[in-house]
Image 1 (cartoon, rainbow, N blue to C red):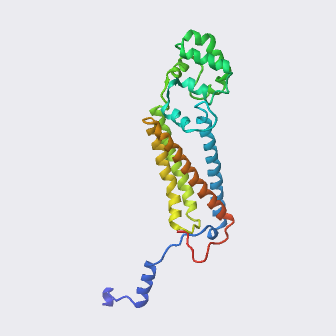
Image 2: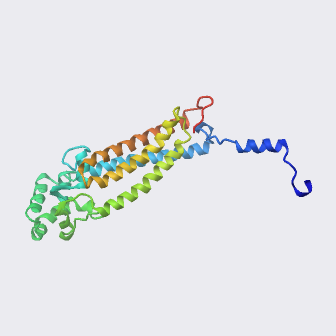
Length: 266
């Protein structure tokens, strides 16, 4: 049998094979990682944290006050995505986030021009000088441009909220971008010690579920303004999940010397 390579395996080789098959991979805690990897994770966390902070500020800059009242409200979200049949897009902006860009008298003059038919001659004579003095400094390099009647005229139509094309563009950018953000954060968070393991799994999955709720509700708000509440809820849950993962990772990266005896991060 030896000549044909049919020698029975020894007891030692059988035990070695069984030990190899039952080897369990243990995911390391932060305290078990080399210093250079902890530095890398720290830099990623710092960058993600700053990026998320600026994203929240940008949301307030774009949406807060659209209803004419200070702060971010559900009504602001409703107007942003579903529009308002009582106003044009230009009026909505002037009554909301752009209200500080011109004097009350100038705003009333522009709104009166819109309400009386948005005549081109009146625009060239009285409205264009206001827009050039108060708005064009910023809008010359960003959409919508306000330099001519042809560019301003579409903004005098009834405000239907964000367009389908814009919603498609913003949705796919957010789906890709937020997936990468929470993938990086989740991979780092996988090294954390959480006493309740199922809670750790929930925290990793929660922001992805919130992304679906948030972005799906953008579209549904165009059908019914009730879904503006789920836009608010989805964004809030996403932010809470981000904050919890970020804070736990930052603390354990540098301050938790070792987890309890016998604990594993998975």
